[in-house]
Amino acid sequence: MIGTVFGVAVSIGLGTLQINSGLHELFGVPQEKWVQVILIGVVTAIAVTSVVLGLDKGVKRLSNLNIVLAVALLIFVFVASSSPLFLAKGTVETAGSYLSQLPPLAFWNDTFGANPGWLASNTVVIWAWTICWAPFVGIFIARISKGRTIRQFVGGVLVLPTAFSVVWFSVFGLSAIRIEQSEPGKLVGPVVDEGDNPGALFAFLGEFPATGFVMALSVLIVVIFFTTSSDSASLVVDMLCTGESGMGPTRQRVFWAVLEGVVGATLLPAAVRKRLVPRPAEAETAR
Image (cartoon, rainbow, N blue to C red; front, side, top):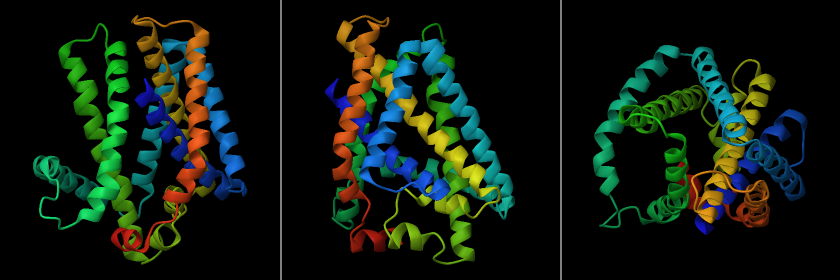
């Protein structure tokens, strides 16, 4: 329960930085701690509403909406890019690289110390984050998979999400690489040199037509992503508290959703100081 609360709280905090960055680009909203705390309150309020409505009326509807919006953004980036053919070829090649490199990378732990900095600063953080998320995600998937066949479960949990992730990272990543190749420093400058990690998405989208609309859509997607993370985690923690597969008292579900927001708002100042400004070695590695 504690791992789930803190894992989701960290996600909400980092997501809020990205939301704040998007609102700054769109409307000039200041990137200040008090603004970010307010944004966490908004995300938490939406999550509380979803939790109160329940699994079918709240969580399911928000998740379905987010999938539609994310796919629409993906298609837009692919079609509006300077070379859709380059993205298509790169996606196929990337999928092959992923399949070939996954087994050795899954076991790699830098035994000979060739690159200890990256392993210590990046991989361990992701491992810890995954450990926090894994229990509640597994329980939540089990809860919503009732009545499914094994084939449907494997396809919906492993095959389709992995395939979509490969396509998503390929289209966005290769598009960014294409922009950087055409205009060196266009994205590396504001993101890496200035340490504006939360603004990376919006610096990227600024190179596409209908910039304002697409940025607004992206902010909405990020909000819903972290809202669905909070409400689903609240439902699982509630199940762990009651020991029942069904939903417990509404006030109890609301308590966990609010607690995740409070923890995120508490941890955010430390996250701002430590994550936004990369050390020189980190900036050079990213470059």
